[in-house]
Amino acid sequence: MTMTKRIITNLLRLIALGATVAAIVVMVTSHQSAEVFNLTFTAKFSNEPVFKYFVVAEAIACGYTLVVLILSSRSLLWRLIVILDAVMTAVLTSSISAALAIARVGKKGNSHAGWLPICGQVPKFCDHVTGALVCGFVAAIVYALLLVFSLYSALGPVFGVKP
Amino acid sequence: MVPVTKPKGWVVLVLRLLALAATASATIVMGLNKETKTFVVATVGTTPIKATFSAKFQHTPAFVFFVIANGLVSFHNLVMISVNLFGKKLDYKGLRLAMIAIFDLLNTVLVSAGVNGAVYMAELGKYGNSHARWNKICDRFKTFCDHGGGAIIASFIGLALMIVISIISIVKLAKSKSNTPLLGEP
Image 1 (cartoon, each protein chain N blue to C red):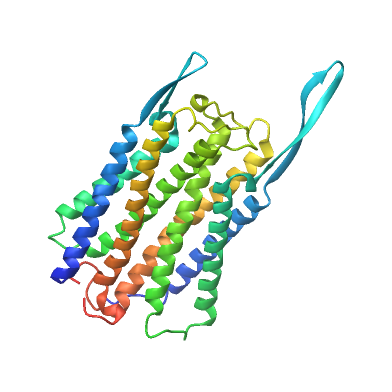
Image 2 (tube, rainbow over the protein chains, first blue to last red):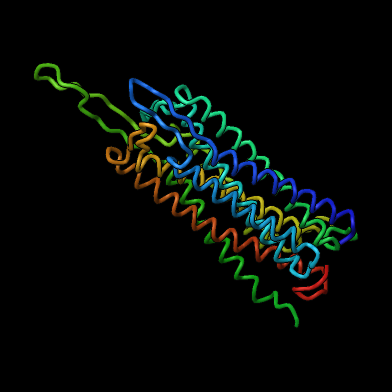
């Protein structure tokens, strides 16, 4: 792999690493208590299984990115890395998709099921979770770009260009 | 070692047929998921007041995305099977295997997003969320929940098959043009 391709790949991986770490940190530190009719209403990310899955999935992607960044000098397993990049992209998109589905219910409610939105009572928690989801979305998009770029640089001869 | 591609041709075909069956059944079962029930809402004097509630998949955007994603992936599998069976000579500037691998990867990501969005909405419907005061709906709409659960299971099977198909496509792509061994410098 030429120097330029290696720099671009490592740069994309660094951005993805930063995005996943930010998503994890912002999601884990999101909690707010609100008093509604003398009842304390605590909103934490761990109350909702989706956000726990989001944190776990981002952590898996973060760990994988870290390992690949550290081992990037030895490119003997480049085909395995391309395949694992594809799997990580699927994991990241699945986590953001699930978290977005539940977050939409929290923000807009679901009148057919009788689920009221909770963002009116805990606006700070909602903003925190929104920030974490934006970071997760950025991580998913960067990983998709990374996958396309890994395929392009690792399988260069196939595309008719020199690797 | 000589790469064996001829006997492997039918493995991908069988996998694609299974993935097509799984995603198509997920689309159809979730697309036709609808249940209407009449409940007694209140009792005024001695006459019970009934109200009709319906559970449809369109009420939840996650399920709508699930149906669309699985529909697209089953269409992709259909196109790939027909190209495999009838269009062996179709090639665009030598990029046939590359396009197959890229499309397989894109559709794996699509079905992964669709099924995971739907599974957490289903979990919310089945268990509710006491902290947010969201009641579960599966105790009242049992058929809706059962059908949805079946569609999600079928889509998960389709996802696993799509991952295996993507890996086979990437390996085929890597082996076809370059003569390097499977593990080595590009």
